[in-house]
Image 1 (tube, rainbow, N blue to C red):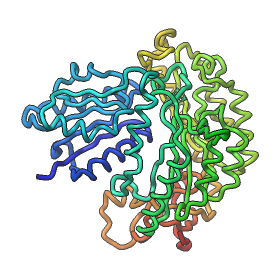
Image 2: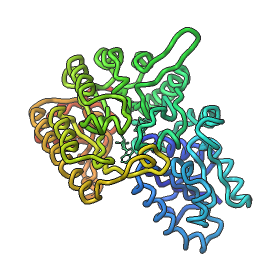
Image 3: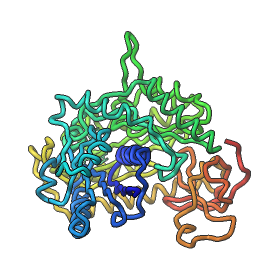
Length: 470
Ligand code: 5AD
Ligand code: SF4
């Protein structure tokens, strides 16, 4: 009988990509997707450790599966990714009905591990022993046979694909658990990346859709691959991928302010497929906080970098992340983040309450002394400032015609299950702005011109002008 799998994904785009690759691997082995955890023979949680909240969610979801496992002891339950690496065998103690614990660098072994558990191997764990030892080689080997297994049906939006350009992180920002769970930074070979993008583009051409590729790295703009005497950087990679036939849009996330070089900004300006969009987290506007966070730049250096982006790529959209309530953050220091948001006029910002992560420098050295309700207040205040800016800055788009890559039906049209041919569609501009408009289902996966009629903080509303070609 066909075995069914269900993957629940928490966390960043890296995890979404890993889940896609896991799904592809299982589909290739003849597994089929299940519509829910209760209908699945294999339930996998692809987890995140960046904040406590993400971990709590997984432990409570695991708790809910306890009865299902008692009812059906053959059901395989796996915990994958960052939490697996961070908590390791502790997961079996907290949730004894878990069968499999697999770290981010061991995901390539997953199909084999599932088979072994199914054959009665008992609780199985595969994680890296430590950051240095084997993890470089392990991560590379684990993903080498894994990456090219790209299948459009394993992605939420088939014509939008992520491609990993680097694993891990070497930055060790003091609050962040990523370097210890995802291992050391290592860039993939440009040839392998291009081959993967070529494969995705071929698949898109066969399906007659316009492909969007997002290059992923924890600090994507520190990408660096040495080959003989030559060093290959992100700007070189973008240039190499820009002309892949069938590729409509090329993006890259997440950037570190220190690596936002002139070359890279100019590449974004000059390369036709690269979208004028920069996600480059500031984390704080206070110099003392930035030092404590070990970010490696001051608020004036960040501002200077923003200036270079806007000067070279007029109209570029910049987005940021902020952490509020970091250890010792005073009200005055928090207000420096508010100042930065006001001045920078980010397209949007992702704002997080500081969550101490055991094992990080900050958790060991500084007190988490901003009370939770104060963190929440700061979060809301910064968000309100950002949202007002997002709404204001969207207004000048009213009356303009923009190019949209159509993603699919909008959430509202899905809710109403529109039966007419024309339905509400959603897509994005080159600057990653969300646009909702009426159109036929055939437009999904195409580039279309839309005239903007109304603008809110997070969404633009418009009508199609003409259908552009791919
Ligand atoms: N607490 C809160 N937010 C965090 N981030 C990373 N570590 C933490 C933490 N311990 C945020 C940063 C990062 C984003 C992905 O998550 O803003 O850019
Ligand atoms: Fe974490 Fe800093 Fe690395 Fe980003 S750059 S993953 S915040 S350590």
